[in-house]
Image (tube, rainbow, N blue to C red; front, top):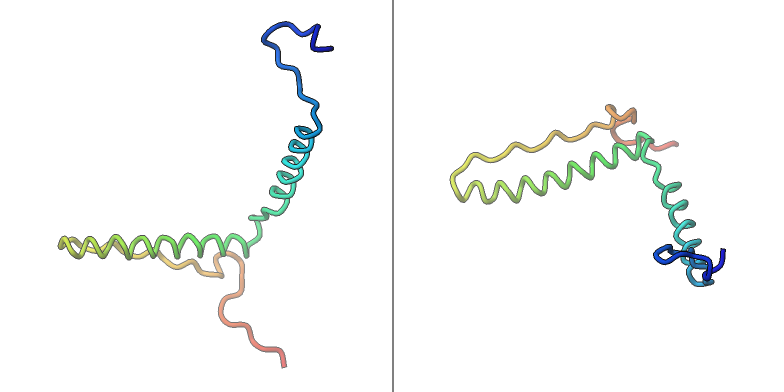
Amino acid sequence: MSWVEVPDGVKMPSTTTYERAIKRQRSNFRSYWEGSRITDTPRMKYEQAMSDYLRETKRIARVNKFRTKRGLKPLSSPARPKKASFGLKGGQKAFNR
């Protein structure tokens, strides 16, 4: 269908080289991004849980500083995630000798 045959208000797909290149780059990046986001491994789940724990600990410390100034009881800290709950071995690794 050419531009002449298109009724008013209907948008034709653009076919400029630049816009096709942008579309191709975005689809390539999207496939790369979705392929590199492996979050179902136990290690990644543990690292995400530790990241959440550290962020929440910082927030609680900041909140408790203001609560103590006002004479309020401090909030309790969250429980630290354990490696064993994610199926990982805990503790330090022994050196191979």
